[in-house]
Image 1 (tube, helix red, strand yellow):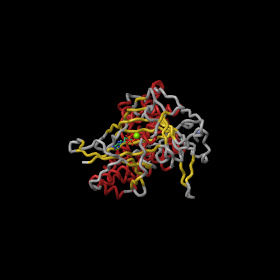
Image 2: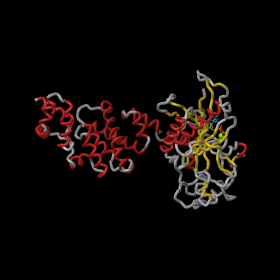
Image 3: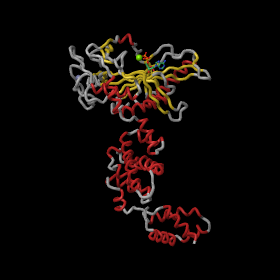
Image 4: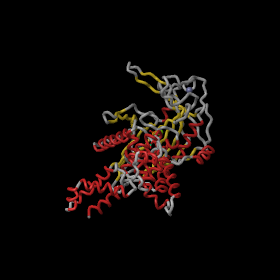
Length: 502
Ligand code: ADP
Ligand code: ZN
Ligand code: MG
C-alpha cells in the first residue's frame, strides 16, 4: 500500500511596524508603489542592515509556541540568487543556525484515523520578504519594492503528515497561534501566510512496515493561496504520483510544481536550486544573536495558546468541545465568552439558596453556547457585524442569560430582546419591559387567555376531547399568539391539559 509523506514550509509575515532591517513602514498595503523604500531595503551599496528587535521577539515567541529549542547562538546568512525582486541579489535569511529548532505541534484531526497527530518542527528562522512583481496589462512586469524587506518567519516541518487533511488542520492551528500571539495576521488569501507542500509516497505492508526506501524523491508544490488550495493540491499530487507508481514509472527526481486552482492540477515549474546554488555565507554586517535571555523573558509572558484555552473552556465552563473550539477560534469571541461566564458566576453566587457553580455549569454552558453561537451569531451575521463591534456587552449578555435561565424570558421573546439589544445596546431587563416581552407571570391573566382561546375554538375542543390529542400544540400556539409570545409554553401546556380534561 502507498501512503503519502508530507512536509510543509510556511512563511508568515510578522506584524511589525517597520521592516526587517530598516525603518521603512511594513504592511502599508495602501501605499503607492515604491514609496516605502530606503537605501537599505533597495540594497544600495554601503548601507548597513539593523535587525528589527520586535521581529526577533515575535519569532522567538513562535518558536516557544512550537515547543522549539531557542538558539543560544543564532546568526543571519546571505542567500544568493539573482532575480528582479531582490535588489541586493541576496536575501538575508538564516542557514545553519536558525532562531528555533527541534519542536513539535500536536493537532487534533476530526473524523480521522490518526485523531491526534504530533508534527515535528524542524526549524523556524527569520528572513526578509522579497519585493513584489506586478505583471501589468501592458505585458510588462513592474517591481514594487514596498514589500521588499518585510519581516518573515519561515517554519519548516518534518515530513510527518500522512494526509492532506492533517496539513489543513495543522495550518489552521498555526494560524490561530500566530493570531493569539499577535505576531501575524496569518491570512493565506492576503499572502501574509504562505505555504509550500512537499510530498512523496512511501510503500508499506499490511503491518505498516516500510517496504523499500523510507523517503522517496519529493515534489514541492507552490502557489497555494488558501487552506483549500493546499488540501486540493496535495490530493491531486497523491493521485498523480500513485498513477506514476502504478505505471511502473515512480518519481525519481525531486521537482517543483505549481498549483493551478482553475484547472485543478499541478504543473511543472523551474527546478529548484539546492543549497549549494545559493552559496550561503554568514552575513558579515549583523552580529550573531544569543536568544537565551530573551526566551526566558518571553516564556513568562507568553499568552495562553488556543489549545490550552479550548481545554480550559471545556473544563472551567463546561462547554462542549466543538463549541469551545468554535468560540476560541476568535480571540475576541473567547474574551467575550469568558467575561460572560465570570458575570454569570458572580450572579449565581449572589442568588439565594445553595446554587453552586459546578452544579449549574452544564445548564449555563448549554444556554451560553446556544444563545451565543447560533442565535447571536446568526443575528450578527445578518447584520454583517462581529463581536468586536457588537453593541451587547458581556454584562448585558450575561443578564440576558439569567433571564432565560430563570424563565423570565422564553425562547421566542428572548430572540426579540436579543435583537433589540443588538440595536440599542441597552440592558435586557429594560428592553423586556419596554417591549412587554417578559414571561407572563400572572397565572390569572394566562388562565383568562386560555379560556378565551378554548371558547373561540369549540369545534377543535370537541375533536380533542374525542381523542385527537395532536391538537394540543395548536392550542398552545394560539395562546402564544394571543400573548405575543410572552406566555411560558410549559405553563400554558399544563394549563391547557387541565382545562381540556374537564
Ligand atoms: P530541500 O532539499 O528541498 O531543502 P528539506 O530536506 O530541507 O528539502 O525539506 C524541505 C521540506 O520537505 C520539509 O518540510 C521536509 O519535511 C519535507 N520533505 C523532505 N523530504 C521529504 C520527502 N521525501 N517527502 C515529503 N516531504 C519531504
Ligand atoms: Zn527601507
Ligand atoms: Mg531545505
